[in-house]
Length: 553
Image (cartoon, rainbow, N blue to C red; front, side):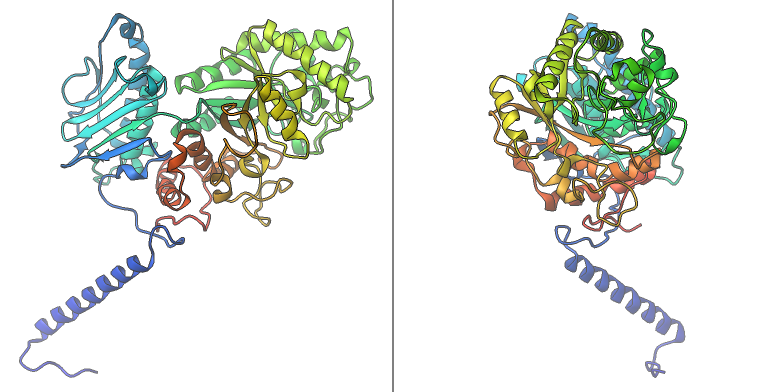
């Protein structure tokens, strides 16, 4: 035991001991910070106190200028305001008010604040205003956000831009702003002073949900939409049909759902969307500025349709119903004949009637039992039906020889890039979804319990570190966007979807939104790490991959 210091009382000696312990602890923490640079490694970091700084936004904006002063704190006096304007702006006033109401609803839940929505957008609080005088380069999705001690103001040329700005506003608040219930621990809901100017790199930024292999209810699809909207995605591609199930009602072809919707992978019951269900999904997506792109996969991946209408099978390709496995490439519709094109017309016309967006996706992948010439003619004829119904046909990259104008690249086998390049020289546009980079059903590592490995494993950096413009030697300007497909052969709950989406979805969202010269893995992984606290507050499952320096829990 150390000897007592002469002349000091017992109480004084205790106080000195406590001060020494505190000093040693502080020194240790300082050393840890020196050793754990945020660009290095995966060392856990504490969640920062106070307002979130703007260098934590995902996707990273075009321009961020930090301000000075205390920032803006939400209080029980905060009002969300909308602005009057020109006659053209006034016609959009209802849409802008809807954005304000949805923002207020999202902020009221965790804060418990009243946050009334009022007009005009003058005075303090949070203001949403359309401003046609913003530079034309701002586009429909760009916005300007300023925050200071007096309030927050978001301006845009269109309501869609205002909505994108509200997602940035949410990221500038403490992570628990995503809580679905009131946070009662004295959290101060403060935004740091800042000016953000932002617009997207690509016009098409999407994710695909496969509801054919495993069916997901309308409520579950809405939850998926919520996650996409957080990261400024603007397309929801629904893979509605496959060998294991047909998921959309077509009144002219009732057996498609009476027979073809009754199963799914593993043999569980499956399900389908009525017209009302589908339209509700479309409405919910539209409110969050996502366009639904429905896919009917033809002529392959058609076993559920063949089970419902056996006369469409002239090659004997159908498997006994129900088909609950995951093998691909065995089924095909008849390549010719009035019956098959009458069937495709009924389906195309109904889907076009239900879908306000511009695209109908025809699938077209892995039609292994159809001769190339027959396949190209089939795609051409169904593409004409889509155009006659007032929509633009889209398809997987195999449809390039059939004259489809919007091609989704996924299959990099020899020759596919040549077909795609030739199609772009004829004017086709391309969405990049390379399976080894963007397929979110691929495992993170070979031992991960969910997902598949046929395209390899995809860690977060693999999903992030590539450039859609230069992956393939295509006509300059032909790449119009990116999409992250999520196939569900091994996924049957919303929690499992989350584990595969997060944290990889934000990586692909940043590729689609942010400027190419902002692309930096070291900085991105630090920004991504702070999203974990938001997901936890929202109740979203996610994978804490070791390559990301997540804050300590």
